Length: 207
Image 1 (cartoon, one colour):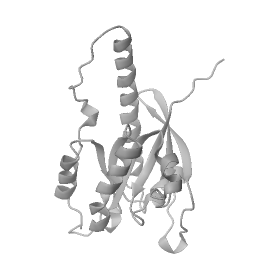
Image 2 (image 1 turned 90 degrees about the horizontal axis):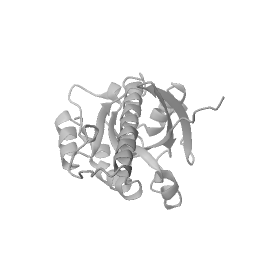
Image 3 (image 1 turned 120 degrees about the horizontal axis):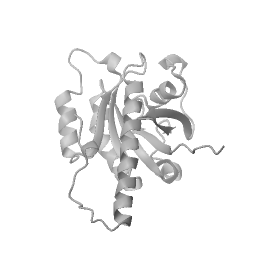
Image 4 (image 1 turned 45 degrees about the horizontal axis):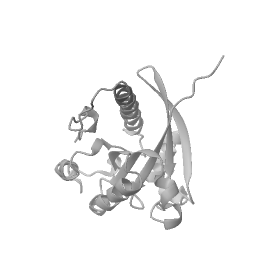
């Protein structure tokens, strides 16, 4: 009996050093959290595969992490290449990490132009009663990005809050995107004209 190949989707983590990209990776890979005192810097590229079932369809998310090395010229092309999704990570208690997202966004659209883009405010457990990054600022960033942000999430790697929901939602977006792509290819194959000005619901900002 032939086995069905599960679609594999590459996802990359982008953001400033110290925002918790590697902690998100560990939560995704083995649901663990390492405190700052026991943590070691990530050396080079690392990735982990995990299968999600969305609408009775299996999809394999392959999450990649660099530990802050995505700007290094020697790994830039291999890191971004063939990415289906990119998670822009910032720390909710660090305004500077949020203000530098525009550069990371530019890197994504330059090196992985077809990737869906998601926004992740991490370290929710450290958020004070008056967080450094407000919901209004996050919404304004989405508007400035002309609605290319497919989803916005708040997570805590320490408690695990929001992590699994974020990745399941990303899996859902990618399944829907692949289905739409196949439908468009089928329509095009049979001679149907495809309008280019129709906006897909999943491409709207979820701020």
